[in-house]
Length: 414
Ligand code: FES
Ligand SMILES: [Fe+2]
Image (cartoon, rainbow, N blue to C red; front, side, top):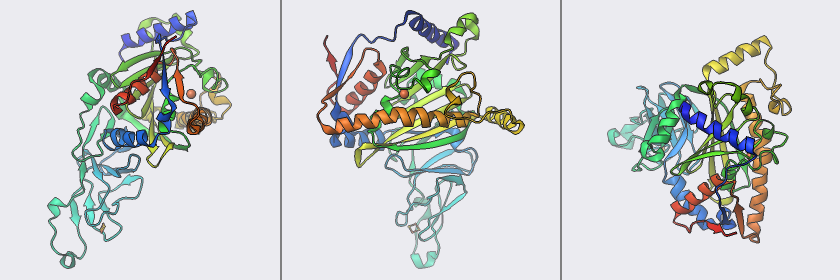
């Protein structure tokens, strides 16, 4: 992020904290609860947001070297993603051209050749059909047109994008817009390596998972003993980038920055929590030499269930330093008690991130989401209200309604 943008955001957050004010959209909106339970809405979302929309699958560090591969089964189209022998990022439908079995069932690894488990047809990591056993028995097959079905795949500034349809449009500049694409490009995401992962499977609509990253109103309440100790909430800088946005809230130590020259302010070091929302289902948290991505997916058979995939990435130097400190015995073990104590924090980054996702996101935020889901399923609570201090929620749900061709959210007249 540009330095002047960091300064502008931090000054606005300082103003809000000093004046005891939160962001103010000046308007409240109402949204029907059916958004979280209606099978027709869920089917439309699955089709328009997941099966027919570009998907961010992770950072370049997912495929660290030629021959690396991973499989994905999150958005209805099974994908085999590879880094081919020339180092190019490629994506294929994970389906054998003989009779459709998945050619790879492993989650990730390193391979030059993928052999289908059924009759052993083999494919290179660039998708070419390279061998058919007993070819003289099977009969002639033109190998050159029976490679794996290729999907549009783009690697840009450390981000791996796939379109689930072979003829889908994948234009990252158009998708993100020039300004956001440029800002994400400043983080050196291509250098980060894969650290921890976590899967959260719970009984809440995928948009309720998303909503938990949409306001800071609850930080000092629901999270008063966890994340709220580091980020007090009730302050927010929000900037919209088309369907996406940037969401920044102050840390407890933001005030200390007043004693530091503005030119030295670094928003990622002790000042604030910086989160990007990438339409439709990505929460992207950027730190100092780290990035955590949360990808949220509906259960296509049940609007009341969803899966969040959490991936934490770090600069190799950070992990190396921590390994050295661990070997020396100078790094504390992370526990649910010490992780939120600013005096005691300093455990390994991966453990810290995973502990936050356990204690704050899963056991607090998503638990609230499950309770909201239950209420929505009664059909008795007709709508939710998004306050003047919750403009990111206005943005999420207005965008969803707009893209799905549904009526806009209803403004609440005082
Ligand atoms: S289905 Fe793959 S080799 Fe037969
Ligand atoms: Fe939360």
